[in-house]
Length: 426
Image (cartoon, rainbow, N blue to C red; front, side, top):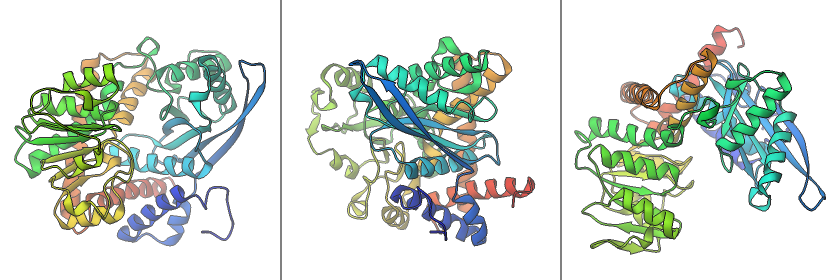
């Protein structure tokens, strides 16, 4: 902690982000003064958001927008609504976005926003008022060439439509590029919904080519069957893998012969859980954590953080792990898996499909043209394939003594530092 105290430095999530930064800086041989620059956001805005509830009473919420680093381009990152949101978490998330965007090779810096609110306790009208007032409060800080928000936890394309409309009303013109993941009618892309899961599947496919000789016939287990896990499973199955297990919070199902992902999705939507899928010899269990230890070639943790730990890592049998969730593997587990020669594709590389697709949307919004979904997904495929192979090659060449995550952070931080030096910032 520095000699002066800030409102975010004691937050454990922020401290974790700083620890990762310091590890990368140590590998790169960066001086402490560079770390001191990089661990603080360029700007942190806190706003008060006041709305009138449906019962006529006034409610006040606190929100933030953290703009971590703009050396590579405008700030980019989502906005989340969460009752547990904090300034420290928001700063940490904005720092991680800086590294994710840098690693993806797209011209963005890192940003993140949040409002401390339980959206489940609000009506749709109240959420709209909250959204419009929050965005109006940060309108001077964002813009198509300044800071481009996107959805995150409990925000979605409809939220982005409200943001877009509110900002356009304030500036007096349709600012198509001010947010991404908008509804298609407002310049968004249908494939933005599938892009994160697609990217997770894509890097697993590329890793299978490098490590397993190909994806065809390889077995896959997906922990978490939400949006990311569903589409990761869907595309891996379409590309020839055999998805043998999927899970949600109620439990998991397993069939070594392979699951019909489309049918599993229908059962999940109809009954609320994958465990109600009962076809053939499918095994169902209420303990979804068991899925992580199944005898598969590829594991996709796409649910929550810290599910692969030092306790269960020795029992993980997968040869490749493609992280769909943020932070599903603890640092201790990462080291153990590396010692077992398991290739762990880190979250900042594996789940970057969403922000890459956002850049594709934004860049075409700025040019005043629209892409077809086929054109967009083709471009995403090419960009993420090239990016994975670039990182994999760099890892093998320069950082093979470390887990791929450390190598990815080193590559990302190094690119930001070089941009800052070129601009005369450090």
